[in-house]
Length: 289
Ligand SMILES: [Zn+2]
Image 1 (tube, rainbow, N blue to C red):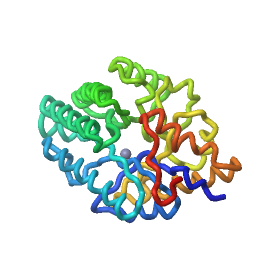
Image 2 (cartoon, rainbow, N blue to C red):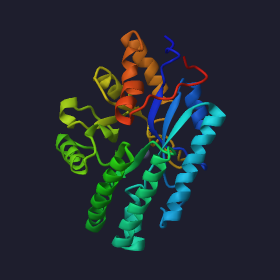
Image 3 (tube, rainbow, N blue to C red):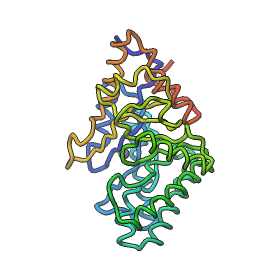
Image 4 (cartoon, protein in one colour):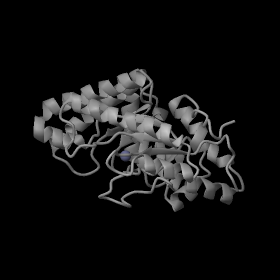
């Protein structure tokens, strides 16, 4: 059954690269029925940024990609920016702990300024490396993450968290960090959530679920807020490393078929955006009401 024209179809976390498939991937998303992307920044150069200027250029590349996606495919792309927590591994080795820490804080301040100027909608990815790292890196990551939550509060926006998989205790700790920073828990999104938890076990943190078929089936009835994402990497060297960008629209159709209507889809695509971001997805001029 076709989806209603006023229902946005949103991938809540993906990456595009000027040296990858780029805008053509967004065109495939569009052709599959997608309408909105949350486009997270990433390193576009061979090594991570080592100056604030490097980060500014990286964010500008993301912004330009979002503008091209909009102009060339009609898909509305929201920009999500922050220094990637894993960059700290290179940063600490190349610049030393103190300078790496400052650089990440400055880049977060820049990202916060972009949010306040409405050039970006959230800070992401923020968090800590998902693999074991030297202690000075993990300590720096914790400090940087606290700064990220403070900037999110000041900038009145969500923080999109990159981390290893979390269990109930991990979610509890994340919620405690949010409380400490006085950032409402529902403004903290765990991106790349790979398994469903009882909503009560997530301590108010919002999951952005990887849109794998079985997981989508499990979460469809959950009250929300929750999102669906592919974490599409657009890296020609790692084809199939994550889900393809056309996945979320395909799952949306499958949910509509399985549940006999599109009612459940308003949860990830409209209500959750409203709850977490504080605004409704912009109507799609080509399909909208
Ligand atoms: Zn990502």
